[in-house]
Structure formats: structure tokens, C-alpha cells
Image (cartoon, rainbow, N blue to C red; front, side):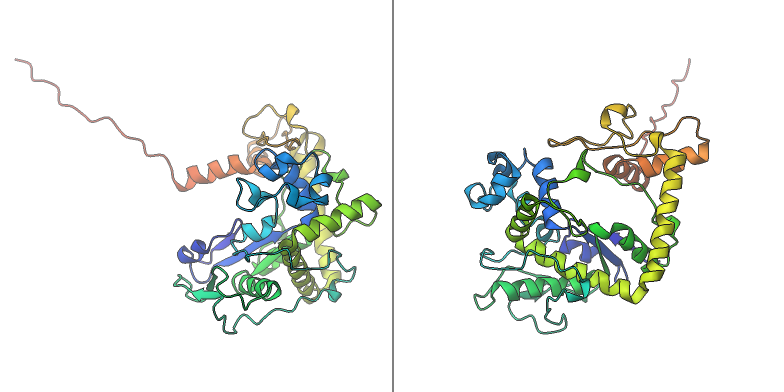
Length: 350
């Protein structure tokens, strides 16, 4: 039986316990959009974000607020790179990657050292269950410049992950995931979770946003430049996603995406009060109320009244936030052990 693993944050230890034929997949997000979300959500957790009066102020001079290694500051720079468990070069500020995403996905070029090449001192092999991957270690030689360092990191990820999705093309990514796993669209249809209130009016433009003000564009450029390792990741996996799309077929993909969205909309009408995500103040059921953290409200769902038992179970499963869903999985995988009281013999009567 093949095991499918959605990984993030990534740990090399996962490889040590998973079967060799596991299917690994993850997701990346435009660092500009991620910066906006992280600043709002992790402002109280990151000392760099706490010191900055606004995201614009932080990005205009991030080194005035950011100190490497300070508590929570992994949220403030290259969070994707951190989540993938990749080592950081001694200094990343000299690495320059263009902060502009080309309109034509085919024009994205980030040359990668072949994953089968000799890794030298940058990687050292470890013993894993799959026994076929190599683990990135600390940068061991000054002979490797920032560009080579990034190339090795990307090559290692390519050797491990079967699919890396892109948040800005989430539905397209879901179709490719279903195809790779021989699943139906019903297996990947669902509702969006962890959306912040007002996120549609983000001050940072994303890869597929066509209209942006001069200030938006400047903030986007600054966010991508500051999160240079994440931007390299995003360019690389955006390019690989579009290569898979071309292989799958654009017309075929458009039809599948339209079908996926139609099924999601039908589920929303059947399951959800109002047919969409709501402000948490309207969610009284603690099982469906998303965890609130940071300055922005995290939206959630309220189920329709009068659902039959089958629809209730399906809709509740789709509307359950990640923390409560994890608790359900924990309870299923590790059911509580009920200790029965010891039976005692009744005393003999004279």
C-alpha cells in the first residue's frame, strides 16, 4: 500500500520512517503574499515584526529590526526555506534574484545542478528507509557561493518531492495532485481554511494579480528581495508546475479546474450557511471555530441546519479547521485506552 505524505514543515527524519515508495508533496507561496500574511499572523511571535510599526516600514529597512537567531525571527525571513528544513548559508544578503515573475512561465529559468551529481562537501549521505536521498548539511566550504548553495538545495528537494504545488494556482495544483495519485476530483475537493478577513484586498500583489499600485509593486519587490531564498524556491517550483501543466495539457486542465470549482460550489451551497467563509464571531460551535492568533481574524464555517446524517458527517469533515481535524486524526490513530477497574472477590460470609 502506497503512503501519501503532505510535508511542511519538512524534516529529514520523515525520510527515516516512511516507506521507500511514499509520495511526497508540499506547497509554496509567493513570498510577497506570504510576507503580508506572516507579518499579520506572527507579529507577536517575531521580535523583528514586533519592533516594526508596519510591514512597509519593515521591508524598507529590514535589518533595522531583524536579528538572525532572535526568538521567532525565522518567521520574518525565508520562511519557506525554513519550513523545508534546508540549511541556511552563512550570509544570504549577497544573493540577488530578480523580484519580478515573468508573465510567461516558460521564460522562468533557474538552472539546477543535476541531483545525481556528486554533492561534494555540501551534502553528506545518511541512511534512510528509502536509502536513496541525501541530506543537506551545514555549508561546509567557502568554495560554494550563494547561487551554488541555492542550486543544491533545489536539486535535493527535486530528488525528494514528487510534486510541489503553488498556492497561487491552487486548483490547478489539486488537479495535478489527483492525476499523480490516480484519484478522482472528489478526493481533492474541499473548502479553503485559514483565510484571513480582508485577504482579498491584500496590500501585496501576488503572481496572478494583474492590477497593482506603485506602492504595491514596491512592497512586492522588497518582500521578494528580502526573502531571496524563498523567491528562488518559488520561481523554481512555479516553473516545474507549469512544465507539468504543459505535459497534462492546458485545455484538459481548464476543463478539470472548472469541474473542481463547480463541485466545490455545489458542496458549499449544500453544506455552508451563506455558502462561504464567515467571521469567527458567527461560529458558536467550538469544533468548527478556527484558532485565532495574530492581528487578523481567521475565517471559518457554519453548517446548514437540518442536514441528514450523511451530509452532516461529510460537511463537518470539510468545514473542520486544521487543529480540530488533527485531534480527530490523533483520536483515530491513537484511541484512548480505557482502564477497567480490577475485579475483587467478595469476602466469604461465615
